[in-house]
Image (cartoon, rainbow, N blue to C red; front, top):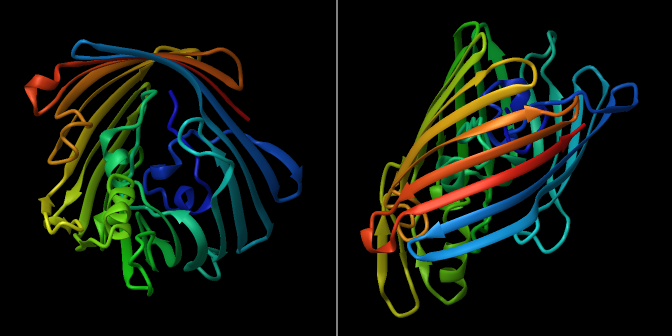
Length: 337
């Protein structure tokens, strides 16, 4: 079982769900004391049918190289480069940040840089990302404080934003995690503007570029992660608590209150074989692109210490019944070291 896109020191330290990290953490390559290098490559082949339309594709879904260093206690840093075929035209800096503190002497940590905000957990045991990630994943250049006390972890930060109308540091995010017993983590998070999330930031920037306008809408998330022996369960609800509204250059106003949720369950038969299932849905979230209801299953085989082969099938339905049902089958070969 894999969680997509490992994202580094900060979120792993907080234990607020491997969230944007999305990938199980491997041993990595130790280049020097306190310095490690990690590589993740995911190659996928997919068949999709929506209504009567069929399509096939094969691509490098992920190529990510991450360098992390802790030259001394209380001083950590990470930089990661990412390329996704069809999504990014060139290799770009996916994350780059510095973290100071987080020690017994100084339990509060200060971090600064380009990071995936811990808004949403996005814990997944499937090949594909959950709809919650499609809506809420948020990468920003932020300054934040984080820390832990007994069974609680907390994170709070401020950032300017990726929207074209973001001129000042006037956005914020916060997350709280709680581990009441071993193997169970609960968490909530809030984002001052869900329009900064992956689901809408590009669309809003297109509106702003054409002399339109857009309002902010607060987003919230709540998640659960339970691990008991060979079983794992992950669930999350993420969405806007007020209308996300924009007006295009012609004066036409669109107002939505998008939401997404998912439940994943997984079982490890042994060290080599595991299986997972998911049921998820969305509301007022790009109804022509994102399924209103979707479910499916996946099976994984750990080929060796570094490579995993996975196969997944998803069946989805859209709010517009005329769009037809969705069948999506994916085979993925992932290499991580």
